Image (cartoon, rainbow, N blue to C red; front, side, top):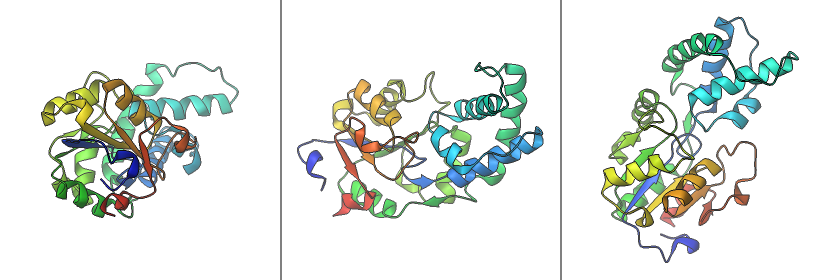
Length: 231
């Protein structure tokens, strides 16, 4: 690796996040959410709100948006009841499948970075909190699917990042030890999961870190572009 803070690491494989790391998908989230909200007779949300809420899976995103709107209407700060959430989830799934990839773009430097990782002999897995039914078609649509062996969505395991379980299970699928498997992500979710699993972690600085400065997150290194891995 050409990143000074990673130079001493002995790596056997790499796990890469999707949203905010490989692909800028805010436009897809915004479009699907607003189509869902329109169907439910609710007002639209802004891109800036979506950016603060993404990263912990679709269920968390939908519940957070609905809770935010309830607070804006002066309602109680309480969990969204299932009677409201379930039709929203069904509508969101339908609309996201329709717009998936249409309003998103691969970040600059991603292709070069993935080439560099593969050239270094590292098998790659994609691990995301996005549902697998959304993640795999998106990777294919953006021409990224060929870089990865295992692809695991947020519904692949009993718990999502920042829990370490998905990383540990992905290491099992790769046949590698966590301490020799690099996690590349964009947020504290990825870093916390990696730390708990015992994986080294590299964060990109351009993604979605819940509106917080990513360089304040405990990580082994930061890059402004995955292309730096090819430097």
